Image (cartoon, rainbow, N blue to C red; front, top):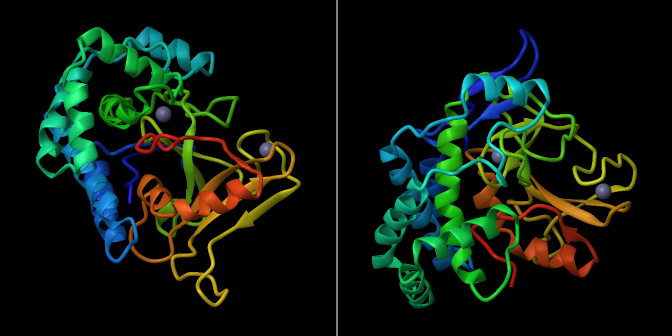
Length: 303
Ligand SMILES: [Zn+2]
Ligand SMILES: [Zn+2]
């Protein structure tokens, strides 16, 4: 569960934007990956993702406070309803490569064979080459010969952006373009509907890069804004009964043929990134029905 750290709201209203909690977000996600791995057909992979996520947590706890845009730049972004830490143009601190290095060092001992090969390749890259991979991730160009290396790069960038987003306080406002993250302008990985506190039963889109969440109308396509032709699909159990974990649904849109998952918190913790990857079978189902996923999960590269 990502705990709401800094609700940004008027009295009596649910927060429009919820910034990530740097102290707990990745650790909670790692626990959720472990939980989902139990008895799962892809358990080994989910456990490796738990290790990557725990390494993200550790890296974030030791990351020095990096420079944020100054007060004037933040005020200007707010006035123009622009994201203050834009994925494609915020001058990222070179420290992101140290984060990458610490994540790789941490996960290498438990990485599966394929992962070992990828990590060795990554280690052979120059700083410039790594920066090029980072640019690919931040422009959602998630393909090419090095696509298998991008989840590690993305994991490091998530640490950087999450750490910065967590420190923005009340300086982030909702954007006019509700389909992208108000903090970094990146795409959502999924939406989440929680059962607790003042956000209970409300839908929030969750940023695939900086882990900020923003409130979004419950039945509406985040890609094209359509409110008609929205459908929901979910996985079924062996006898056609919904799985107990049927708390994940794909929201499909007939107008633009896009889909994104909604994670419903029934009991216990959920995490948009982990619960999304534990339900890849649903992606296959919806893909075969002719819908294209609208936002990436950066820990998984297509293909
Ligand atoms: Zn973001
Ligand atoms: Zn649509």
